Length: 85
Image (cartoon, rainbow, N blue to C red; front, top):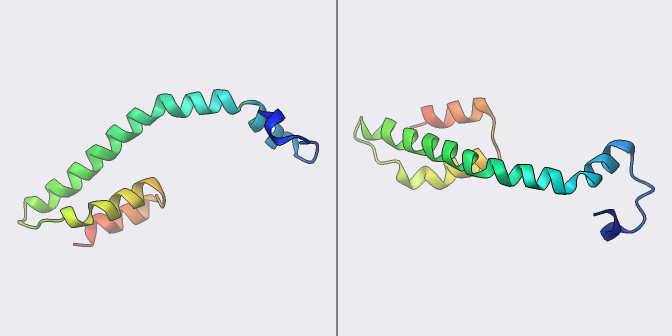
């Protein structure tokens, strides 16, 4: 991987270690992706079902929930999102 970047002498020790372990890190992420996707699916289903029991259709907010889970995650934001309807 370092050969792709050419001169990497300016990188610190920690960044060099990450660069050298790129393949291992990438492989580990690929292994965990299906598990993460299942958990996200469970959370989305829970959100829809929570509001379905009180007669609200929140499917239009699923894309917002997915953005929160994938890109902007924090537990406080997630709790606020679930309580916002």
